[in-house]
Image (cartoon, rainbow, N blue to C red; front, side, top):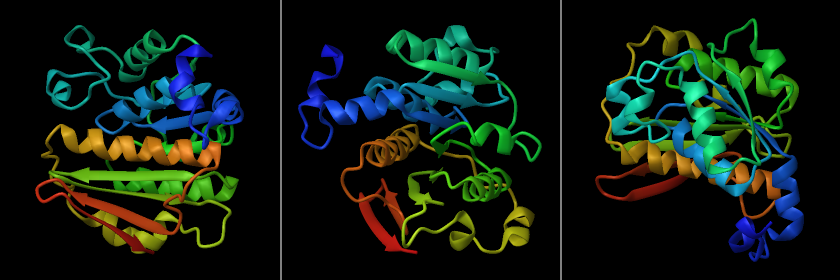
Length: 232
């Protein structure tokens, strides 16, 4: 337990919170720019089981922001490389690898086995699917999105009063799916910061401290460092 001394000494965590982290199972859908800091910080904190879902391979253009990977990983499966990196950081963490895309056929079976689902993806369709499936199973869905220098985070589908779903943020699914793919230009620190906020929300949900972003949307613009919390 000595590796966790610095967080166990926090009254919000303590030994009881560390035990909750050890017993927690968190599914990360998408292990790219957002998924990289999410996976690293949850593993570092001692979350007992992490599931990594992604059907993509590492490319050289990923390395500008996807800090889970190294040049030697190029052309290899992201979740497989990510699992090696996570277990190299913390061998106590069990990593479950899903090297395929989350879809309507597998989403329910995957999500039902985890306590919390975290969004590291980059498209509307997967987010609607995550939200609907998490809502059906009563699983918290920690949402995050980035573009350029901006990002946003919220927590959906919790069973608390005031909880919302992704459809409350973007109610027009047909319209969203018909829009052009968003500009994928981004500076590397944007997913680092937004993914870290997502990881923070996961830790709060597991340990039960602080005020989560349930029913709220946190936004940031790194060009001005303006940050807001909006009520949904």
